[in-house]
Image 1 (tube, rainbow, N blue to C red):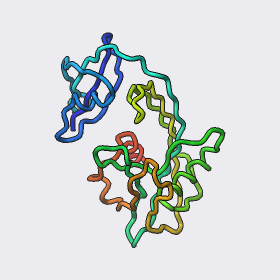
Image 2: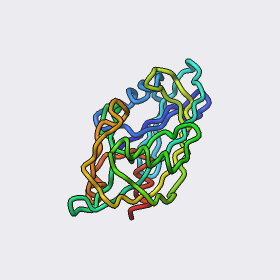
Image 3: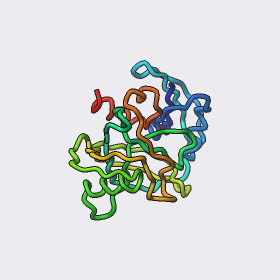
Amino acid sequence: MARVRAVDAVGRTLVEESVPHGVDPAAVLQAHGHEPVWVGSEVVDGQVVLIYRVAPGEQPEPHQRLSAYVVVVAEYLGVPSLLLTTFTMSEHEVWGLPGGGVDPGEDLVDGAVREVWEETGQRVRDLRPLELVSRHWTGRAPSGRLEDYHAVSAVYRGECPEPVPPVIHDVGGSTADARWIPVASLPTTPLLDWQRRVLLRDLR
């Protein structure tokens, strides 16, 4: 799978994302509010990166988000499975860990447990920190606002002693579906890039 990168006039990276199969790379950047002009390509770790220059436009507004996610593996229907969710705002089916934004002043672990319950209906406990992931990009929010976005995500490993069929309690939120996905199916499951890297380290 190729990647696409948007750079400004001095070569600073503004956006870099995977390009879904069959999608115009320029369209990926246009979704972020950019008008891209192709300037070249390079190969990074064996993957082709298509590079586009984007013209100066509206200035992005700084936005920072603190979130918490949980890796939950349990025996579901006799099969080792990972709890995953997919999103209402995604044009293509992409799965990710249950979790999300932490409320102001909320403890990270409490926020993670709450998010898992709201998105999947599962009760998790004994959370152990796995990784703290910092990501920074410029993109367009669902509201249409262009943002200089800094996401700081705490990832935990949690236990689910009594896995049940997933239920989305946060109706009308960002979760479109929640499932127990067999661990053996993960290599062919479309996952968020940054979370796939975390899972490859945690589940190996």
